[in-house]
Image (tube, rainbow, N blue to C red; front, side):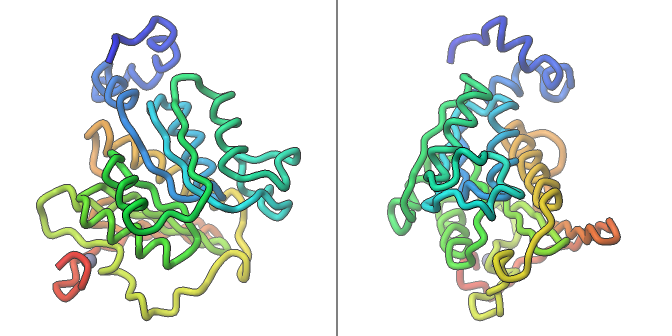
Length: 250
Ligand SMILES: [Zn+2]
């Protein structure tokens, strides 16, 4: 790509000041493509921070419309967006935040080859959906395409976040190693409720992990599941192992 403009040098100055990021790290972000599945509670902070950080291309998929119950936590959308498609509202918000980020929106359910193609084209995939069949389908594609997957979920005042790295040739787990499709995974915030800023905490961690994976800095949450209980504000970190009998990755 072309060299960064003066405006871009100023705009990203505060993160480029970090020696491990520098010009090269910022350039990587501007050249990166990230696929975000879901423009809701987690997808909102993920998309906003990735855009303001200078990720060059975001692909956002969601087929819901904005409802009044979404506004409490889905900060991509405003009162004026109620009734509109979430991806359209998301694209407008992101366009207003940054002209450096190209936003591609997909307003139907992605399945099969179409889902696989988006995963293949992405440098990192972010799971911000609240739907378990989508989570399993996305994991299968990420394992098959060897694309890093940053996964998060929140319910009530509890959140969890981790990173899967099928792109690294090692013995790391996949999403399916943690959760079996037969497990009782029906819990959603529609039925159980959720506290808005807790969604923001987990989403901003997801965004941070995406940046780290893209710039190859620090140590991401690969092989670790970070659990938050916001009612006591206690964090736990669990080591994750690959399931040798996992039908997806083994
Ligand atoms: Zn697995």
